[in-house]
Amino acid sequence: MTGRSALDPRSVLAGARGQLARALGDRPDYSVAGKVVAITGAGQGIGRELAVLLYRRGASVAIIDIDKDGAAAVADRLGVRAAAFAADVADRDGMRDVIGRVAEDFGRLDVVVANAGVVPRPATLRTMDGRDFDRVLDINLTGVFNTVRPALDHVIAAHGHVVVVSSCAAFAPGMAGSPYMISKAAVEQLGRALRVELAAVGASAGIAYFGVVDTEMTHDTLDRDDLGQALTEMLPWPLNVRITAGQAAEVIAEGIERRAPRTIAPAGWELYALLRGAINVVLDNRLANDPRIHELVRKVEQRVRG
Image 1 (cartoon, helix red, strand yellow):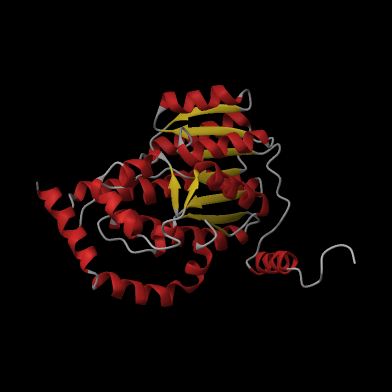
Image 2 (image 1 turned 45 degrees about the horizontal axis):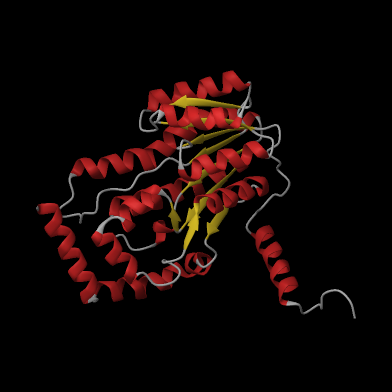
């Protein structure tokens, strides 16, 4: 007998994935070749890797970043179908102007990826500076709105696609870093609303969720910080699995080309996402009663208070 058996696990898995994709509303074959894509936070990390990947697939790319030099370096590296735009996503008027310039300079705007984000300094809600809380929400949540809102008429005219980058942190515990989790949970809801609203007018939207991505932000928060290292050692699977920025970019790119309503990586988070209602009841109870977590929280508060 030649070929794969009907019971080959790979065939079964591929079939299940196809059925799941159809059930979740994936619409295949939306090629980015010839499309104009705007990406925020594209001067580094996931945004930069995504810009490179989509450019290689034939897209024209608007590199938007608060770091003007970083954005320019990426655009120069790519070539004539890329252009750099300096903007702070927390600046609503500034983002409206930049999105307008992107559409004018390229002649159209098909796809927007709201990727820019930051993490707060570790602190509990009791010890947190309100300005730190506001900064994270201004960039991670309001910044997504500021990016997407002025682009929607262009995207709808092109029957295009929007991606908002949430995080697996949206459904994970948020002790000592709650503004990040709060913002990403809110972005998830923004993306869900956007998907339904755009479907009514011929466009589409999706949400990207990632676990720990190996970026400078991760290194600063977890790897170069004593308390971050202690937390990392406590993380169970799949929370302790890392992916590269390039792998995250590949997931977003493939999601765009499928018009996927949601993409999640690494794969272990899929089950968590589907069962989070039950898992979080158990997990929150375990964390609330774990002496190691108690000690970590106390150390965070001691450090914040000096």
